[in-house]
Image (cartoon, rainbow, N blue to C red; front, side, top):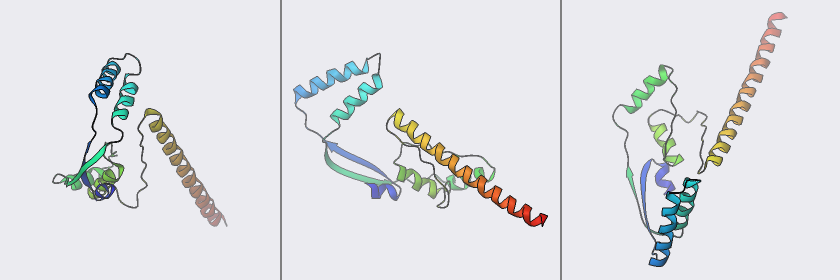
Length: 159
C-alpha cells in the first residue's frame, strides 16, 4: 500500500471481520451510548471504533491513478509567483500528499517540508510544537550566518 501512495495512487483497502451476534449487539449498544454521551463523546466513539476495527482480515487492495485537473500546476505556479502563500491540508497519506504537491509544482525536492501529523489533539499539538521549535532553530541559524557575514563584510570595508 505504501508503494502505491509513494507513486501518487489512491488506495482502497477492503477488509472483513466475522462477528458473532452477541458481541455485535453489545458493541452496538455501547456505541449508541457513546454517540449520545455528553462528555468525551468523540473519545468514547473513537475507542469503540478502534475496538471493532482490530484483527481485520485483508480481502483486497486496489489503487487508481487520480490525475490532477487540467491547469492545476500552472495555476499554482502563477499564485506562487504572485507571492501568495499556499498551505496543504489533506486527509491523504503523507506520501501521497507530497507526491501530489510535487507533481503540481507546489513543492520541490529542495524545499524544507514541515509535516504536522497526528491521530489525537495531543499528538497534533506535539507535532506543531516540534515544527515550531525546528523553525525557530532554523531562523536562529540563518540569523547567525547573516550576522557573521555582515561582520565580515563590515570588517573588510573598514580595513
